Length: 572
Image (cartoon, rainbow, N blue to C red; front, side, top):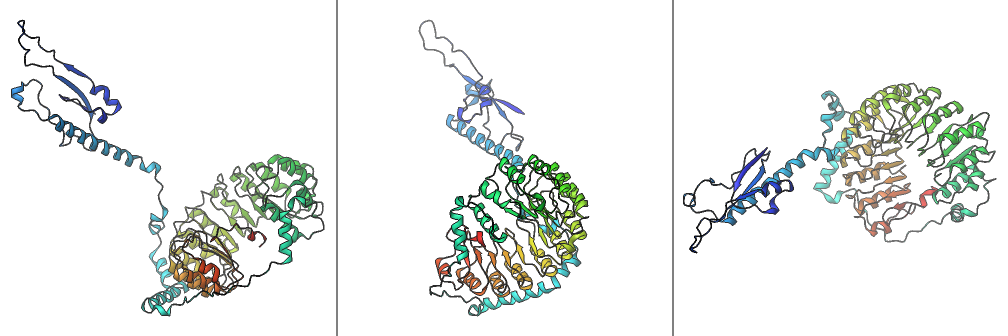
């Protein structure tokens, strides 16, 4: 909608939009009357130019604002109009209205377009509203079980520390004594030397399999693996091949290596990051040259094989009847049909389909429910994983589950954790990283149902310090690995719980970006947990050299404070 109005004063060009400039320049004028023939001065009637301006109405206001300059009728004489307002005043009124109009129009357009570009933080969502639970169930979780008793103990501990700070359990002081560094073993020195001169290795024949796997792992991590060593690994007598990085190999190299290998003897085949060399054609060629196929193969890892298709999975299912574990993480061409063909022909025990974006887990769910021996399920980053999938899967096969990985499955809420805790009493490893819709009730369920876990990963969760401490008070004795990476609320109570309840078995601890922990609390953890071997502290800028240099645990390797590359972790 456009309103037309007349004015004697031209609007400023800077205040006009491009599509309004043409309308604003439209004008008309009256000719000046010629002077008298005798040379008398000209008439008082001078040239007057009127500008026609097109002004769109603001949808926010509907009508012109109160600052709209009042225009006078065009047919009035100068005397009838009276004294005209100053030009600069009218121009100021016009510019003031136009700036307000543009500001509100842009604001309205931004509000309208905001939902398209907005990225909502999941912590702003109310989990209890999205995932309603019965009042009786909530009361049972809050009032019954060891978790509630642990919460009471922690609350009394907090009250005691507030009233008497000197009674705090954390009483750590730096030792200021030089720690005796343990000399590396002869085996480690030899392995590091082989990694440094990996190009000179001629053969690995005659070396025990466990030592051979360590050498190959070191060569892969240092990017010194080559075709000659690969052919040595795939000799006629080998039963296990473990390559953590095949990105260096070409399709021809892998094809020749498999052709010269007795694939019917292979029991374990790991070809991770093989997207460049592994394809359906290479697999077909290897099977065509073998009369029996992968008859002995039990474990297969093809992580990152982005050229692998459903047809290749069908070939594997037919040629490897003994296959029990398969890792297809980040195989982007795999769909639900390929997984269904595997589940129909094989009785899998372990299935890894992390970040396979084309898989719809609800389509493969009926086949997964029929896998009576399934113990390991990893579906990290699969966008179709939902509460319904977890509920049905845990009801059908939860009693057999030992390892569950649901990292980055953003649709999961506390109800899924309740199903896991209720049906997975034998669960040992749980990965629920980057699940932003979980609250403290999830740890209450886990504390009551999963009491024997050895590994728990809670990275980027929003659990409170007290709830994590209460969970560790109940179930921390059996933990070997604990990841609290970027859990912002981890603080004093969690440090006490780790020191008192996890000190017997804890070996790997990740406290990166937990910036509420002090030197005293970290020192108390390291000195108390005698079996701790690796402590990750990336992003902990509050930690000083006093902790790093003067703690009393000579066996722990602290990673991240001085940007140390993780070379030493390769041989662990």
